[in-house]
Length: 313
Ligand SMILES: [Zn+2]
Image: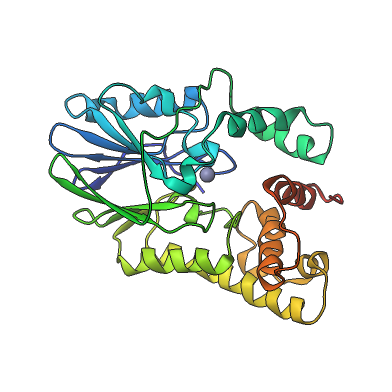
């Protein structure tokens, strides 16, 4: 899939900065420009990528400085660059639930991953080589909310809609009604497989339905190229397929590993990051069996890495 970084003009003061190819850590941001001020949706995984993005937007923000930054969720590739935007007169906004995970611990965990002497280390090293996590000073929100928050950005209406827990604990959609634009964070991946960390998967499907109900003209996914309702529906199809097939296998008494191995994913074979199926099926099993101990992020990621490398977790 070939597409450019940007900035892409989406109309009515809305823009997107994309990071091809949308793989692990390669996330997108948005800019909503009002009269005399702008709102930024997300920063990037490291300081270099974030600075490049801010420089790309600079001609747009020179007379409309960024006064508001919204982090869609707490994964590092959406907020580790916050320090380059923070400062006097800048409000950083996230959901209460997302803010709880935006910590030094979160940064330290990601820095440690490539140093592991196991399949997780083997899997992450080539990805980590694309980023430089040095110098990151965790810069959390200055304002948090739950549910809905409506903003006026220099006369432009911007609506924040909390849809988590779904992909993570506190996912937020950003809707710009005048532009017909929705910035989805990682509720939507285009070109790569969806990923259900927190779940349940039904909540991710419900979040997708909320996006579709907004009848957007342009959808800016958390990763991958720009899309529309059709692209969003395909993400829904993947999630429905996995939920249905995993449920059948759970009821038939298959182990989670047997389920992962036997679900026919050929309709989605074009997607990268196929190994996410390991976390997604596990999530369905956990929802159906409340007695099952919940896997933490480390175990989920370990299972994805094992699937991708063809080894046993
Ligand atoms: Zn992401």
